Each structure stands twice: as structure tokens, then as C-alpha cells.
Length: 424
Image 1 (cartoon, rainbow, N blue to C red):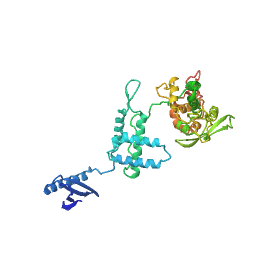
Image 2: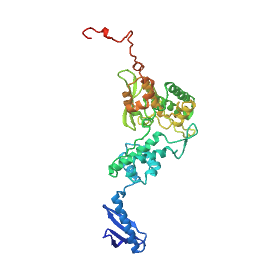
Image 3: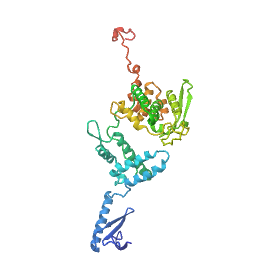
Image 4: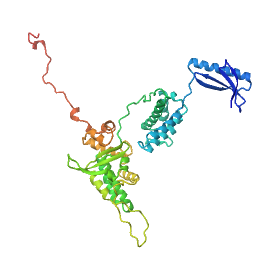
């Protein structure tokens, strides 16, 4: 316990000693806030002199407006944000998405901003962070084709700035921050137009021919997986679903219907993914693929049988089972590598997500309505225009572009001689 021993400066400063300390401590109140200071002196008179100097210094800072108000740090606000975000978004954001925020804060943002007061995070500090991250290469540096260390991508730094913005919004809601600083990038506000990795019509044809041949060459326990992979490629290319949406898809979510306008059979799919529950109508080519999936027996488990035992009879998938159980990513990458389709012209790797990009691009090439594509793919027209429409040549109307003004043959300037007398 601390006991007050003396008061100086008309009672504005109090001197006391703690039980386990040999030094005198000073305490005062300025602008409704308590300030404490250790004089580092054992002698009372020297402690009084040191406390007077300290108090007068504080008063001078108050007069000059340089007395920094103690505030919550960025690290504490980040902890509060994660605590709120996990609870508020439960069931609406996947655990992996929430974990991404935690990783960005722990590895990059907290080490840089952690000890700063929340009001000290200004537009200049955010720019300093961008400069620092642009010169780093991460824990496992990536090497590009030229042999140089590759810095973090533009999208990686953008995701980190989004996490920073979420923390600052938490501070605003709590009253710890009066306003948000300007966090927009000062340069390169409009990035270079690039397209996401996709398969051109010729490449897509090469891909499903390669998966068909791959399935025909496989035997035994791997044949079922190879056939599933072939149907996965065709199913994705005819529906445009996201990979996570396909992984969640069950047989009861898919219905074969007859389209009223065209009379063709298509699939009506109830989709569950990152955008919640939505609906999708497939291309006619997805129907035979789904019929094969329904009629394909599940693989029998590999168990040792006695001589008098018979292997269990194969069973068909039930309504509550997913269309594509298991993970065929390794097999898919093997087919892409063997067929020379793993990387596109710009060196970007193709993944299962590239099949969704292929579906959208092929629909644009066939001049489908962009609004209907956006609704069917559960995305926005803006996203399609930005990442897909910009590099599809069929989106350009040559007739509307190559407009020519007709030339007036024999045109000559009008002179006074050509006017009537009344007009002249």
C-alpha cells in the first residue's frame, strides 16, 4: 500500500513511498487525468525539487498542446476486433476466412502498428507500411522466372490493408478514434488490366480429352477417381460453380428439368457457398455428366476377405451424399502438367477455379447476356466486366466501332454569288 507523506505546490503534487520501494513517487491530476512519476531520489528535499520540475514540465506541455493523451494501442483494438468478428460472423464466414484475418494481423500488422496509439495511425503511417511490405518477400521468398525474389503481390497487400481498415472501424465504433484516415493508395489507383487464368475453347477441349484418356488408362482402385475427375471438369465447365460450391453439392440439390424456351434438358442446382444459398441453371452438356455420377457405384472399401466371403455389393450414391467425395487436386494437377496446360501465356497457374473462369468466358464469347451470367454465377456485373469482359474480343462490336462519316462528293464552299438577292 502507498501512503501519502507530503504535499507540495499548494497540494497539487503529492509525494509518497511504496512499501517495497526506497524512492519517492510523485502524483498529480491535470485535465482530469492522473499522472505519476518516480523521482529516483531517496532524500525528501531532492525528491521535492525533482517533483516540482516534473510538474512544471507537465504544465508547460499542457499550455503548448504537446501533452500526449494516453490511449488504447492498435494491438488492443486488433484483439477486440477478432473477438467481435468471430462472434458476429459465426455461420456467415468460413473458419478459414476468419483465420486469414488473424494471420495477417499476427504476422504483419501488429508487429508494425502494435505499440502505436490508435490515433497515431495516419495516412502517412499506412503508406510507410505499404513501402515496407513491398520490399519484403515473406517467410518463404518466391523466385520468379528471372531468378529475382518476388515481393508480395498487389492483392496480398490489399488484403492486409482491408484487415487494417476493419480494425480501425472497430476503434471508430468504440469511440477510440474520431475518424478513419485516408487509406487509399496514392499511386497506381487503377491497376493494369489482367485476366484470370482460364482455358480457351481449344484448350478446354484438350483438357477434357486428356482427362477422358487418363480415365481410360487407369485400372483398379484409381479408375473410379479418374472417372470422377473427368466428370468434375465437364461439370464445372458447364455450370460455372465455384470449387467450394461443388464440394458442398449433394444429389438432392440437383434436379434435371426441361427448359421451356429451348426444350433442352438442363440442371437446376441449389447452390450453397460463400454467398449463402443461390441457384444455378446449367448448360445442356451437364445433364449426361450428372446422369453418369448418379449411375456410378461407390468404390468398395479395401478389406481383406476370407476364402468363403464374398466382396460387398457396390451401392449407388444416396440423395444426401455429395457429388464429388474426396479430393482429386493432385490427380488434376498431374493431368494439367502432362498436357502442358498448367500455366497460361502469362505464367499464371491454372487451378480448379479456372474452370469457373472458363465457363464465364465461353458464355461471353457466345454473346450471352452479361446480367444473366452474373445472376447465374452469383457475382456482379462489375466483376465480370473487370476480370472477364475486358479481354474477350467478342465483347467488341466492330460495326459500332468502325463507323465512317459519308463523304460529300463535289462539295464546294458557298459564296455570295450563290445567294438570292433577298438573302444577300
